[in-house]
Amino acid sequence: MRHKFRRAAHIWRTQGFRVLAEKITGYLPIEINNILYRMRQKSPSRIMDEDWDTLVILDAARFDMFQSQNTITGELEHRISLGSTSEEFLDRNFSGRTYHDTVYVNTNPYIPYLNLDDGTFHAVIDLLEEWDEDLQTILPGTVTEAALQAHEEFPQKRLIIHFMQPHAPFIGEIGQELDMGGWNPDQESAGLGGNTIWQFLRKHPPESSEKIDLDLVWKAYNENLDLVLQHVEQLLKELNGKTVITADHGNLVGERLSPIPTKRFYGHPYGVYHPNLVKVPWLKIESDKRRDIIAEPPRSTESIDQDVTQERLEALGYK
View 1 (spheres, rainbow, N blue to C red):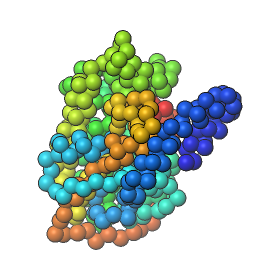
View 2: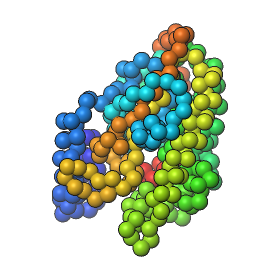
View 3: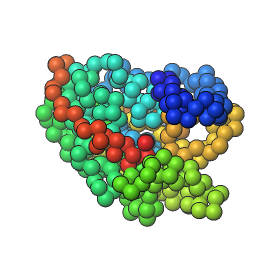
View 4: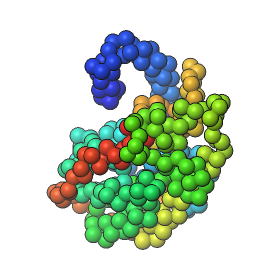
């Protein structure tokens, strides 16, 4: 809700009341659908109230995708996420709270953007400087290596491991055929005119003259999930304690909201509650041996430069 008020205030200041009124009118069907959806669903889950020693977050993994593609043995349930974007998910789960029994291995630019790397956790292992300039993301192998080091260094802490995949950009062979990367220095904006796959589809839906093959998009998206799951399997061989695999949010690939019909949505807009956005996997992998978890004062973490944070957000299509 704070985000919506901030956004409304920004539009008022920069574009005036008339544009703000138009935006609010356009948003009303979405908010009505949100209310009706909440009435039908169970309450969202706070991930820190759940039972786990390691929480693996697969950014933008839809429940239906995960259910059909996962080969990791465990008990699959689902949860309702607190947000439809990483920003909302992280803000609503962590802002204003402290978890000094937890270490966060991070690839998501919203951790420093929301100042969650300053005293929220015992430590944040921030990998934003490990950015792959060609693929415009942080590779899953980099995350796996950092997570294993963190597990060895902090044996008495809960561990959150945040992979960026299957979130776009798509890094597999099929995904790279799409030639849809992320931000680059020559772009004037990473909004509607940006170069992520979801931004392209918002501007050029499948019925337009510059259409893109949605079957290829699905294959690339699924490929991204397969790639990251291979690394998660490798990681699980080395971790002790109970592990849960989940997602911060899902993605829409041309779905409309209901029961009030809306335009088709692509990606994961903030504050939009649809099953394919907020219903996320919750795969429980039990262990006979649990970690002895203790809280300790936070370790000093060097904050990531805000220019770097903004650049990474743009590359992922958020700004």
